[in-house]
Length: 324
Image 1 (spheres, rainbow, N blue to C red):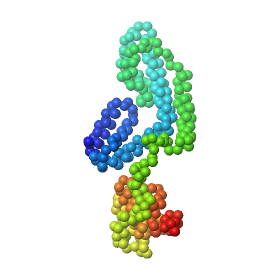
Image 2: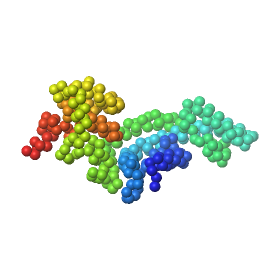
Image 3: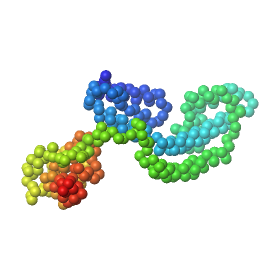
Image 4: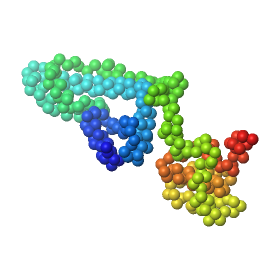
């Protein structure tokens, strides 16, 4: 049983350990979760587990979609590595004497393999990251007779270069079309089983944040608007509304970036008159509260968050009209 602080320590230690085990330039992603059906000992970790689970399933769903790209990247890596090996083998063969002192020269070449790497890097303009591990290469070269190596076939090198510059480019251009085709054949990726998103109200974010209050008769903002209404009256509204400048002076006290506050304004100024009435002001503060609590804001205002006084502008949103 570990708390959130201990969990972060375990997470860091695991990342450190995996970095030594997995030979990859990318940092391995570690997902945190709870895998039992008992009550949480630390309920504060609930949302972390939900977010981590969602990320894991999204990454799993993207595996088929990214399979072609991974294979293509692997092909590029292998082709570049084969080209480098050809240059290394050719260079070692050319440095070997034709008659005497082969063994001593072989040992010298293996010892100075780093200098050969540097020469090939400078002459052929090959990235240092494309070269094989030098210590591993030294161990392998001990087992071979350098005079048995073949000379560099420039025609094959040209074919590899052409493949990397032309063929690979064409394949890369085909990937977006393949992804579009796969999306049309299977929208949303893998479905069923653990990927079934029909979790009802227990799905991640289904009853939280901007989704809170869906299907309820009472406007979601209504429960929290009392302090917002008091502040609205203190701002001395004219004609039941406050100006944009007046609203800005108060809203920036949230310390949210201007880009976020601009989005809040666009969502709240429902009638687009450049001012906020009492309902719109309450909505703006409600949305700021959501953002401060870690929830994302929608790009368009959901129907259930439209102020009741504005629903008459759009009869389809007015439930009282529909009931009549």
